[in-house]
Image 1 (cartoon, rainbow, N blue to C red):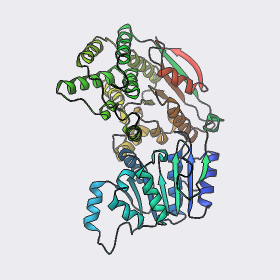
Image 2: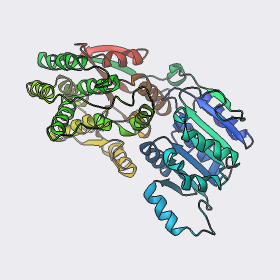
Image 3: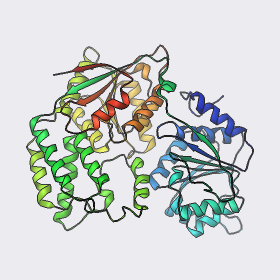
Image 4: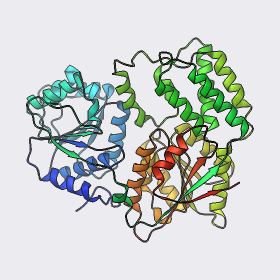
Length: 477
């Protein structure tokens, strides 16, 4: 079977789903329920590749609950060799189309893969153009967020006989009678690490470090301050982000606190989105939409607003003499690179701001450094991965999914700097990547940094998610 990328080797249950879905007749409605990180997005790309190239489908509509997810999907599709154009539509590009499309011709008459935010698609003038087109496939990502007027759009497309195939990707089962009067076939995937890592040989090492007393003092103070804020002033979700930033790097939390202080000094309260500064935005936007649509917590959108308390925290950060986590990473890379000047090392971190900071640190150390994240255009990301493959160095990425383009047989080390909050989700992504790139004869050393201070829980969560792979524990100090 020809796949959309040479390195793609589907796991058995994924391959079975592809074959069964493609064998179905049209007018089929299907929900795929699977935990994050098990390959739903990859499978959707494979299905589109097969439908277009082998089943001669001409019209595909992809709806996402968020603009960032829309752009992410469009970038992925543009990286695949497809014979029909991929269009990412927002309000600006739609207005341009409106001015150029003749009424007699209408919208979407030519073969196209259309990627659109469902909140834009449900606008009346846009929805009418979608309803008047017959779609070979309508694919909806994060379908558990399809409620209210979003759901009305999907129902209207079905009533207009506009959908030949409907695929709903979701992490939780959809409600019964999700589409009134229509039966939805259901496939459920469960995550089993053995499906991904059976027969592979690779080593995972836990690298212990101990935070400095001044770091522990700062984090303890931050914990106490956050505990004093009731949930109607700052939500638990927002508190978690501040703690994750502290666990990620001193630079990241200092940048976040400084920005908060400056906003308050200028009389700005800060919107909820500001709390996610430096986060991998494509992973968070759909969650934001979901959070903001919940009546239970829509009033919890204020952020830390005590300027004196924030100033006290910044002073504590300024008093930190050394970032122990960063120094541990430096020692580890120095050890790995001993006698191997042109090695290939990948460092994974969850925050864009942390990744950018690490990149600047190693640039100053005269290391060949490449940094990629969701904020960088897909073409530039591809160029950086290519340069890393050819010349080696240190590749720093704020997204595990980018590892799909890396040949692990030529990798000296993969270092997990931080994966927290969604550690299980991201380690599932890691298993998927390893299963596609590691063969029976391949070996690669994987390291993750572990804070023995245990003032924050995130490293322990990562250890629990990775424990079946851990073969050794060591310290560099």
